[in-house]
Structures are given as structure tokens and as C-alpha cells.
Amino acid sequence: MRITAIILIGLLLIGCGKAKPVATKPADKIIATVNGEPIYNKDLKQALALRLKNDPSFKVAPNTLKEQINLIIDERLALQHKEKSNSRIEILTK
Image (cartoon, rainbow, N blue to C red; front, side, top):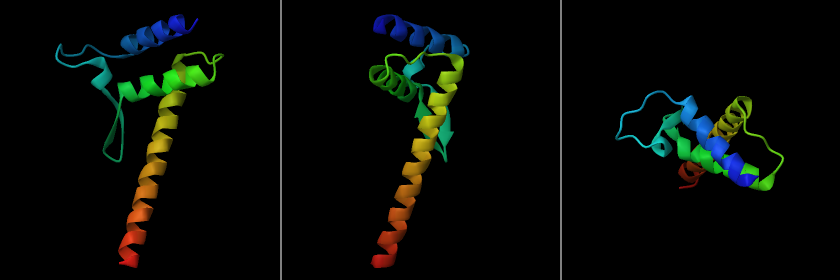
């Protein structure tokens, strides 16, 4: 069942992309940016694999791919905000 899901993820991700230059690997493709920080296709694959591991009933579909990308974006925004906040604290305490 998991192997089928992983194959399905791979096929969906391959089918979602446009024609790529031969030198570009699908795992290296940038699928989004958050304040200039790239989110790669490999990040999405890792998040989906973890989600499938934690929730075997999870089904990969176009809407769940978008949902997962949005979750990754939200995480990056939160991390960037935390880093920015910590930087301010360091500057004020020096």
C-alpha cells in the first residue's frame, strides 16, 4: 500500500511539472519561495512521506498537494518570523 502511494506521489509530481531542461533534477526544482527562501520539490516529497508515515489513511491528490505546500510555507514563515524576532532580541540586549 505504501509503495503504491509513493509511486502515485512520484507520478503526480512528474505530471505536475512543465518540460524541464535535461540538467535539472526534479528533486531540485523550486516549487515556491518564502521571502526569497526557496522551497524545493524534495521538501514537498519529504513532507508527504512523513505525512503518509504518520497517517496511513492520507491520500495524495491535487488538493492535498496544495495543502501540503501551504503547510510548508506556513512553517517557513513561522521560522523566519522567529529568527527575525530572535535577531531583534540579540540586538537589543547587546
